[in-house]
Image (cartoon, rainbow, N blue to C red; front, side, top):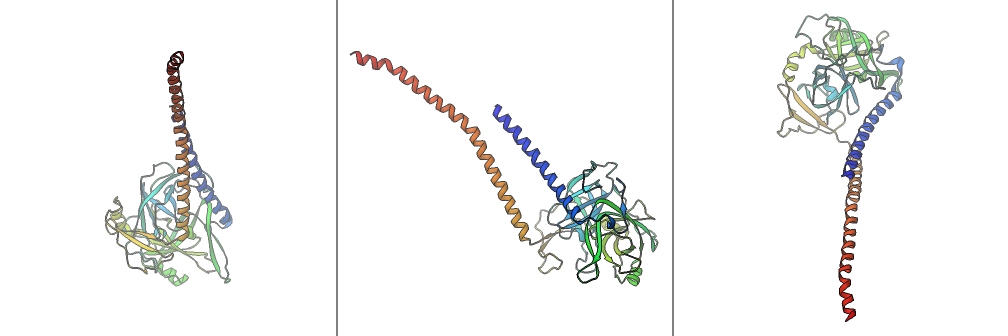
Length: 384
């Protein structure tokens, strides 16, 4: 009994140690990325450090190598861009209440995503029209002063053609000359949440002044702006300070003397109906998914599996052909099996070994009793 209790304590201590090591590995990986790519003077173009808890509705996540942001519109629902989750293959960690990527702020909460709902008319191979999506979480965040939801805009309100807005995110951009001599992005991550004030205008202005053609459902910003790793992040317009007016879809260099970047944003007010329909909780269907024909474009290759979502939404799961990822999974699986096998053998050795010695001692005692009882018979025969 003492041995079993000791074994249970050892198992519990091992589990605690493994969980701590996993958390440490995740933090170290994030630190390595930040150290390798961070240049504080050029974080989120024209931006500055945000104060802690300034944007309690902002969340971050990564799908593959795509680091993105999103807005918490329900405690278990994230509003983001479809381009951020187009290659979604498995649950991702969604982090809320974060500020610094290099240290534990004590305010973070992390939940796993359940499934994404991508707009069924998302133009992934063209101008990214309808670049909007929702991420349903397995459970809900606990509301605190650091984690709260943000409101959606009123459907089709009057909005000025131009104005000021605020964007926040962890994206960091270094702009320098590339191999061809032209300016290009070198995206990375900022270790501290950044914010920037920028001007927004309508799509026609961007087409005339920046040679950027946008869908009718989008508008653009110029001057200061977001970085590639800020995609999916919410924009707050000055005339709607407590509402998410836009979602960052794409960003370009403007090659202008006065403006650094041009960003395109999904006009959230045009999708209030779509969001309302797909806001209703759903679960993954049990019916077999439908697989579209091959050759469906997009970078990365692979196949797409489409699940029917609620209402007009569609749940799209991208399955990429990645040999290196498969080999890594096989290697990790082998290591886990080896560790489990070693643990089982050790348990059998410790638990079975002790009773076997008791059985040996019992056999020795029985043998002694036999010869002790047999000794008088031997003496009687000798006397005869």
